[in-house]
Length: 337
Image (cartoon, rainbow, N blue to C red; front, side):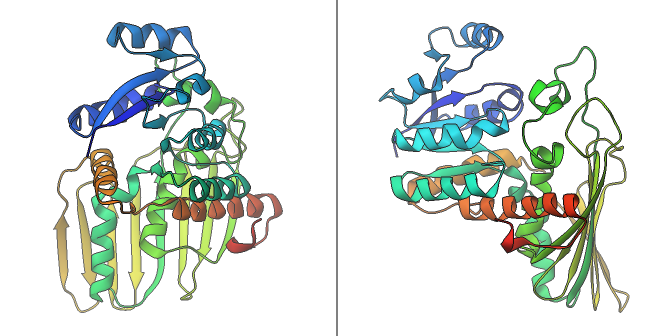
């Protein structure tokens, strides 16, 4: 396979922290061929690091270049489906940050455009490549915990404005989001994707939320969600990007035992008969695993795990959460549109 020549659109924090170092490790598969950003700050930074690299302020100009095979879209969330759709129309494959859209309608349109153009959309959702998801699935499929009745997933972290830093919480489009659900849409989608991989798509959702801080970051600082599944199991997901992030955990309870995972490097399996095992997880770089899988999929013309169809399912879940928060009622996930 020839190297895939990439145009990077929106080389900001996530480019520096996650994708740039991984693509350097995969230089035999991918070649960074151009950049696009609207700010002078970004332009100056890129020109200093890549002095001879083509640079564009208009993504449409980059898309018109025949030497670009695919684009990496790292823009504010509302721009994701707009630029992705234009890239597909220009005959480019797309690697795009999650979520691929902020609502079901735009996500469905992008899935349609992918099919019509014959080009491919890869969603940069690294959480489904984390080791704990695969290990938990193995344990569940082994039958050791029995029939799964309920899970509790707690994920709290603080993201907010911190003076003198360039962290995610200082990003203007996160402070004043032009999309629903604020940080749940931006960060919580990771957790939703991981839960969907393990348990599948829920049938129903009931959600309640609280807004505390007055300095932006969306309509809620905390959400509690109850998911109902087709096998009559129940999932409880507690999510906040304002509360302290310590003591996050994930516990799955079945008729014969339980699975416990605390943010870290091991999973504990406890059976009702007294048997207990601790499974050590290998060190990992899920972003590397993700890009490596994308490369393999391109070579073999196969699909990655997290297809646009699965990404659409997760946006349906979030849209149902939004409606439940607004209405105070249980919402059928498949009837959100």
